[in-house]
Image (tube, rainbow, N blue to C red):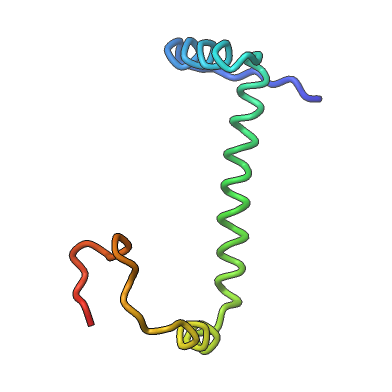
Length: 84
């Protein structure tokens, strides 16, 4: 485990303390969890970019062509969309 000293505005520190208390965890656990969540979001974005780069338009078009051409279920319409 690594110790890390960070500088936070007092308002941010107070908010973190209140949220950690509300969640029943320590400030350290709260900050570690927040850092892990941020890290995961960056890693997910990078993974999705890599996967998207492997995609081929022909595969996408083939997938779409397999979908039935039917009207949406009532309530699932896109508001403001033009009907075909």
